[in-house]
Length: 144
Image 1 (cartoon, helix red, strand yellow):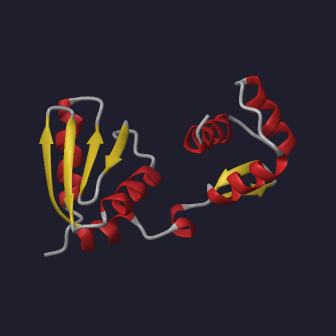
Image 2: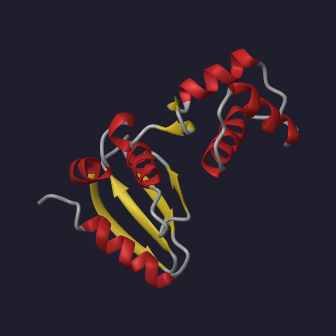
């Protein structure tokens, strides 16, 4: 079982309902066949940027986790093209991952997911019309 898979399952559980303790989180992971030690779970929570609040573990806001999508797009994004339900973003070399993470952190309903390379981000939308709308929104963030 990979670390990234475990991280994904932790995020899904945290977003799916109130998880108040690491014990509770470990129990929920075990139900999914993921056996994890307390030390590993603590490290995972720290790496994922999860914080404990009165309502349970939550992700930090985008402002606390890094630069905004608007800022990154303005600085590194230079093209966006729609192809059916896909949007291909072109960035300066080495910055596609940062743009993809910022876009994922926005949690837009219009974005099914992203895949990043070195200078290209593939954004998956649910349909063609939504992809075109996303393309326009992202291009609007580019500063001339």
